[in-house]
Every structure is written in C-alpha cells, then in structure tokens.
Length: 406
Image (cartoon, rainbow, N blue to C red; front, side, top):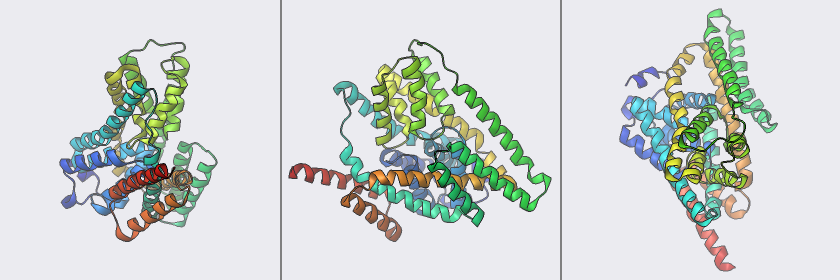
C-alpha cells in the first residue's frame, strides 16, 4: 500500500501488517472493553499494537501519538484511525475508526434508552470500582515503555518534567504541547544551524497559528437567542464541536453548556451533566456523549446524526495530516519539534494517570487489583483485555459480597 511506503522511518513490518479483518476485530474488541478515557485507550493500543502484535514500531507509534494530540478531536480515536490508515490505507482508516466508535455508541444508546425510560442512569459503580485500578496499571506500564523510547536525551526529559508541572498548574494543553515542540525545535536549530533546517518548522508553525486563530474565532461563533431544533442544526453543531475541541470531556462540556443549555435551551444542565457522565463511564471514546444527547433530543435518528457529526472531522483531519508526518521527520528541526510534542503528550498522560489513580485506588481491594495487574503486565505480559474483564468481575464479586454482608 502507498500508505505503508509513506511511513519508512520506524514503520510497520510488512510481513506482520494487519489485514482488514484483523483491524476490524481488534478495534471492535477495544471499543467494547477500553474503559478509562483516552489515556487508557492509548495505553491499550500500545500494548496490543506495538508489543504484542508488533504491527508498528514504538517510534512510529509515538509519532502518531504526537500528531493525534496536535489536531482537534478525540486523540485516542484519531490514533486508531491513523493506525488503520498505516496498515490498509483508506479502507483501514474507515474500518478502524468505525469499529472503535461503534461499540461505544451502541453501549451509550443503551444507557440513553434506559435514561429516557426510567428517568435515571443504571448503576455502574461496581463495574468501575474493579476496572479503574486495572486501567491505572495499564497506563503506567505504557508510560514506562513509551517514555524509554521518547525521552532520547536530558533536554527532552526536562521538557517532559516541565510539561507535568505546567499541566498541574492548569496551563492550557495546547500551550504545553506547542511550547514543548517549539523549544525542542529551537534547541535542535541552534545546536546545528543551517537556514534550510528551519523552513519546514516555520511553515508548520504558521499553519498551526492560522488554524488556532481560525479555531478561536469559530469557537466564539454562536447564535444568540434560541435556535429551533432540527436534525441539520444538530449535525452542524456537532461538526463544529468535533472540529474545534482539544482535550478531555471537561473541555467538551464547556462547548455543550454554552449553546445547548445556555443559548438554545435544548437541554437542561442536569441532562448535560448526565450525558457527560455516561461518556466518561462507558468504554470507547468520550465523545460518544454526543450519542446520548442526540438520543435525548431526537431518538435514534438524533443519536446517529450527532455521532456522525462529532466524529466526521477526525476522519478528515487524519486523512489530510497523515502524509505530513514523514515529511516532518525529513527535517531535523521539524523532527525535533515532533519529539517535543511527543514528550509533552506523555507528560499530559502522566498527569491524567495521577489524577485517575487518586480516584481509583481508594482501599485495600483496589490497591491489590492495581498492584496485581502491574505484576501480570510486566512479568507475564498478560493481554490487557483479560485484565479489564478480570477487574470488572472482581468489582462485581466485591459488590456482591458487600451487599450480602449488609
């Protein structure tokens, strides 16, 4: 495939390249079991794609991770789309993305149906109680493996540490990502010189600056007053959100609050918070929050329209940006910029792991699950799917024992 030829540095082994069936099965399974948000999804992909199946070299995985963090939309979904494109071109791009999104969408639809039917959310605390500590172990193991490859020198190590500190201080994630990239590019350029080394980086920064300016302008575009509900306005709204939102479900919440609740009054605040909660506690992309909202507003057609709208920009952005990644690596300065973005991405992932860990490891059983999962991953290289399923089963067992004891 032309896609495979484009990615020569640290690319895939043609003999081990996944076919469409393998891609479909892998991402269907991942979309059904990947609890824990983007950091957990990325960790599970690294475990399966790089170390277990060896479809991709770790260096190339890190390049794709950096690229996914530089474009708006859900980073884990975009990484899945990148991986599919690398393995099977356009067909792989579509298969991987759709198969990763579809299971989560169907699960969220089930929650939405129950919410409308019964007026509240089904209890999933017992499931998450067992799954969350397992997810923490998976994220930490992936951070260790990826960090050993990404932190190539002391300067990049310092950038990673700075990224962690700035993220804890609440600095905007785009500032952290682009700042680390620019500093790494300057370090490379000042160290080796040569005007030709700067051209790709300067062009890329101009393009990024133009995009961010346009995104900032578009973010402020909102119709004052109430807009009549319809499937077309619903679709266009979620296309806008999918084209502009960087970061977590909490960033998504700000967009949804401003228009759907504040300006248009399509939802109540309670409904919006419940929608965000469902996106956080179900497996797969957090952006399936749009599925829940679409169902509340217009049933099955609304759910499908909203889901298509919020994820469509990701497919387009990945398709457009994929050919640019190897070109960045052809320039020493632009390649250094990408290295800086990668270590900053891992720094953000580390902060997420810390925050999730404080919520996940809360007593002896959860500490035992986290430690046991880490041992099984590092010592026996157990498939992360079995760990997640084991954590869910353990949570159910603990819940049953405590209920019976009461």
